Length: 375
Image (cartoon, rainbow, N blue to C red; front, side, top):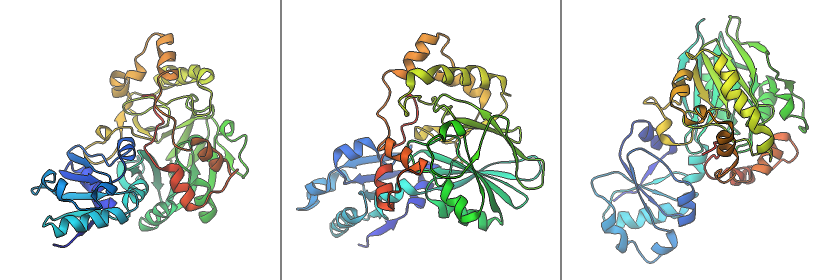
């Protein structure tokens, strides 16, 4: 039987549509336990490739014949070989094109809303990493927020909708993924904005993004209003777009809150984090739709694949927003934190322009799940 190929885009659709899929992951057990393809109705079998070198007879009975089966490895090669052995044994299976490397880099654009004067806002879901970036479009102009290093997807998408990228923002100096902001600015001539308190060590030109900055996109009244919101980093800045959407960066997520320790400043910044979440955000309209820079678990995806929720709902349901005792809050965000992101110090240095790793090094630095949340 033929061995089929499944792309990351096709797997993403299965995640969004909550379809069934059986995944045979042939990476090492530690890699699988650290990071895998997640779907609400996915089942898994992890058997390291080296255990299958002599054949697949011992796992045949564990693989269903009534579901689609996807074989996954790090870069593709091992999964092709295992898929071919399973096919020769009479099973119909697929392998993931370019493996987890491609899964880590796939971005899926999702429209999350219309703006008041005819524009729209799109969310780019980096399904394998949990990163979320945004494009605000109005009258042929576009602004990018928290772009990843996969720059072509944004350039191609803007071209497909007839928009020119004129402004690029990073809500903060990222520590879990490499920003594409500077490179896209170089390619498009767009203005690149960074919070100056996060940019004291950067080696390149940028426009300082400060509290109260208003940036208009297109020639309509749509504007992006910067709101200083420290806590994840000292410069963290949120955006209120069109008085309708709150782009919260890594300060507030759907199911958690941002961690303050990625610059080694947890004790110093915990007070800023609490003030942002419990004071600055409380002064905003509860009708704002929160659009974070990351999601933590697959359950945070809405039915259309987007990650978004009303601020009022988060005030009611997000545990991190409902800790009255300041000492309990401090303990939550400074103790028992998850592991820090892979190579986060090198990622920070890359985003400052201090080091310039090649593409293979960048991929290796970003491998694994995002870990920007407290829990």
